[in-house]
Length: 273
Image 1 (spheres, rainbow, N blue to C red):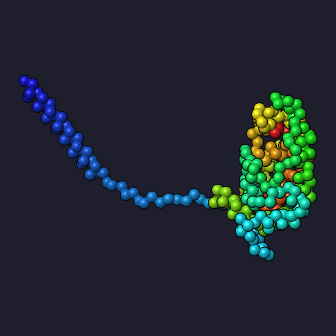
Image 2: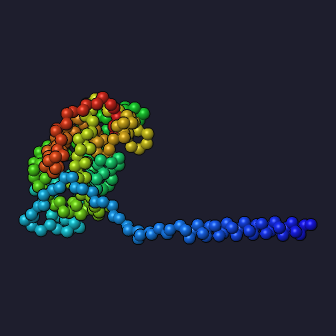
Image 3: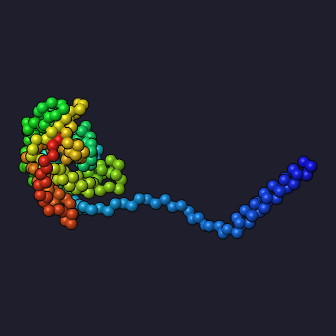
């Protein structure tokens, strides 16, 4: 009695499997094949240029980027004065370091070792203790020599120098990792970010959890590197720098993007580094 039952069960399984197989094959043959075209890789769109600069007609040929330190330093000295150029600017990789610094200023961190200027004299000065202190007003005096040079600048001449050497700035910016970027747009973004730094005339509280001081106010500590620099130089110095930045923006930004001179946005927040 067992063998007929097993043979019958086996036959049922085979029949079911056959029915399923032929049903699947019939369904497959009845399904029209879809044509898949070739996959075409698409390049990301090139961002539109918002602040195009006029093409300069150089009276002398521009040097290669890697050989530009001497010519650019001489041209810079002609605009700001040789003593200031020698005192405040490093002699090497000027164009590249200016590009890196401008790109970093509106971000959280600044590559200090890649800045084009020499370090400030002295060390950061704060009053109080590591748990609760304020930026000493004497710290603002460390920035005065730089700010005095900025205050005396003819921004039309600065813009002329910038436009003349712009192909080198653009080349350095693309080599930095922005092959489709336009450096002048990045400059305008950075200027706008610096102009948006809060104007604080009260004491700025700082703490020192490790080697470096930080702003006690988390909102100030979260500002960009350039905005925190504005706070560290003090309100009087920052006001002078902002006025010059507005002049420069009006010369290098597209007319449609020029904002009205922003009103002071004094804040009572505290914090600093």
